[in-house]
Amino acid sequence: MRWCYSCMIPSMLQPVPAQIEEGIIEVLKNVSRRTIEPTLDSDLVVDLGFDSLQVLEVIAELEDRFDISIPLNYVPTTRTVAQVVAQVAALVDGRANAG
Image (cartoon, rainbow, N blue to C red; front, side):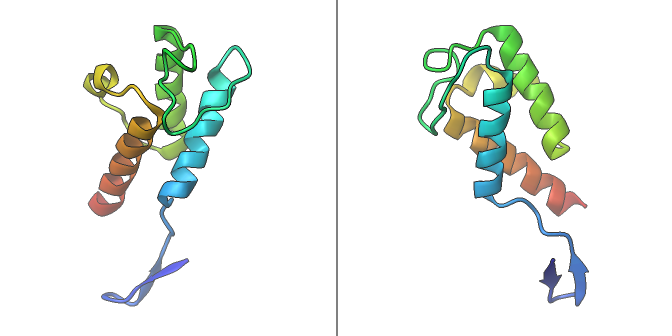
C-alpha cells in the first residue's frame, strides 16, 4: 500500500517499471516457441524470433496481465523489449492517472 498524502486515503500500489519489465519478460518467454533469454536490447523479431502471430499473442497477454489496451498502431514501431516496457509503463501510468 502507498499513501496518497493529498487525500490521506490508502491507494493500491501501481506496478513499478521493474515489475513491468519482469512481467513482460515472463510473457515473452511464455509465448515463445523456443527457450529465450530476452534482454531490454532484444529485438522481438530478429533476436527472439517472433512472428506476427506471436506478436499478437504477446499483445493479448500483456493487455490481460496489466489490464490495459495496446493500440495496434504501436506495433510497427515497437521493436525491442525496452520499447515494449516503455509503452506498457506509459499505458499503465495513464490508466492509473485516469482512475
